[in-house]
Length: 103
Length: 120
Image 1: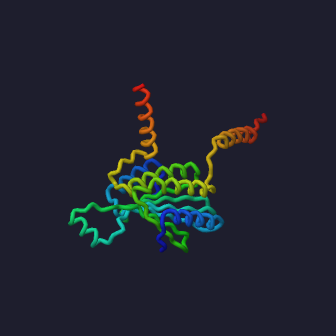
Image 2: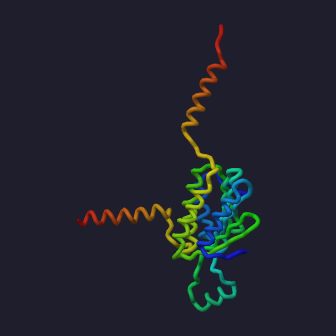
Image 3: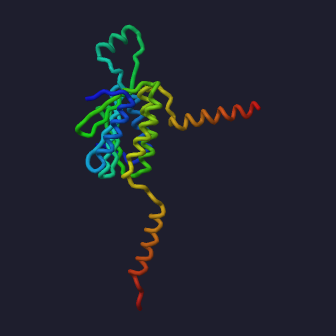
C-alpha cells in the first residue's frame, strides 16, 4: 500500500487520479474512534494512494478534500475546483470590491 | 445495502459514529456514478444524450451498510451537513500543541544539565 507522507502531495495526486479516470476512481475514509486513527484511500483499481493520521488538524484538511471530491464527483471532472472554499471567498471578495469602486 | 435519501442517510451515519465510539470502525466511500447499467449508458451515448452523474456515498460499520446518492444541486448542502457530522465525531484525534514541544525541549535541557554534573 502506498502511504503518502505529505498531505499536499496526496491531494494533488488524488485529484490527478480522479481526472484521469473519473468512472472508476473512489475515495474511501476509515475512522476508528477507539484507536484515534483516520485513514484515507484514493484508488482507481490500478493505482492506490493512502494517507493515515492521528492528528486533529488533518481532519480539518480532510474536510476541504471532501469538498473537492464532492464537487468533482457531482459536477463532473471538468468542474472548476481550485480549493472550493478559496474560490467561493474570492468571488465574494471581488463582488464587494466592485460595489466599493462604483460608489 | 440500504439506499436512503440524503437526510435519513446523515441521521443513520450519525448513529453509526455514536455506536462505534468504544469499539469498531466507520468506513465512508465516495464514488461518481450515473446509476445506470452499461447497456443504458451505451444507448444514451449513442443517442447523444448527456449522461447525468451523481455522487454515490456509502457508509458501513462492518455490519450494516447504508448508501445515498447526491446530485450537483444538493451536493453543497449535503457536504456542509456531512462536514459538521465528521467534525462533531472525530474527537479522539490528537491535537498538536506547540507549547508541549517547547516544554519538552526545556525539560530535556534541564535533564541534560542535571545528568552531567561536572565534579572535578
